[in-house]
Length: 381
Image 1 (cartoon, rainbow, N blue to C red):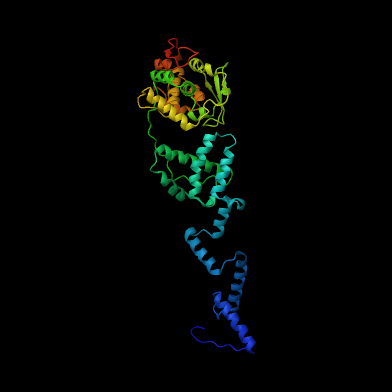
Image 2 (tube, one colour):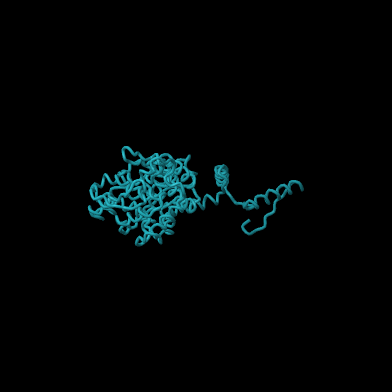
């Protein structure tokens, strides 16, 4: 002890061996064979070890954690910090992983949200769970900032869509009390400015060309998109019995719409004329796959020599533009198209003239019995 050799005596050989084993065991546990402690220090050491035993940690580990925490907290006590933490994160929620809560959120969406929206959220939030295999309460603004760095090279719209998806998920967590209400984990992720681009639409002449040359099975797709404003994904899920021929509307149910909300799309005179030969059909309007539909539409655009070829969402963009010009009513068109008034105002207002709008909705088949004979413009519109 203190650099000097220390000898101990035992009554016999068995006692000496027992003492040697005790010293060796203490040494292996990191306890020096001889410690010059006062009785009160020894009692304090024993009491400390007894308190730590249920937690299965050693005294030096506790000391290290205390020092590290004190550097972070400053004058705030560990007990005060722990009480603050427990106030935000109840013990029963503490070990919920990001993946568990994302799966719960996606299940929640199934009650009322469209399959399109759920699929989009599953894809975006899947990247979140892939990046964070940890408990939800370990997410921080800094960690999410690093997560969003991978999307910096994407377009502003794509970036903002990811931010919106994560924000929706985090708001759900707050409503369920999985996260504190006043903690903004996205505060370092600024919404990027999106450049307003002109929407690509077709002219009435191009619509007439497509309808006049389209194969019979493709005509309903063009009509529903161009005259009724349905999205391609909605047409893919639409069945013929959703069309009310007598009252002239299409019931777009929430389960097939992008927004998850029901809406009634108008069935104008021209749409009714084109679709009349299909009135007795049942089942899906387009029974084949999306890829088959896309190939057919692209081939039609090439065949009719449409300038620029097939335009993605071009029929729906055309409907919104011409319908808004015709009605001059943003609220009405918003309800019919299943779009927000702000989107209509930003992308479709004052895009086309009234005369062009009348020409668009005046494109009719020359003969109802043979819908591909030719096109005329209804001058009464």
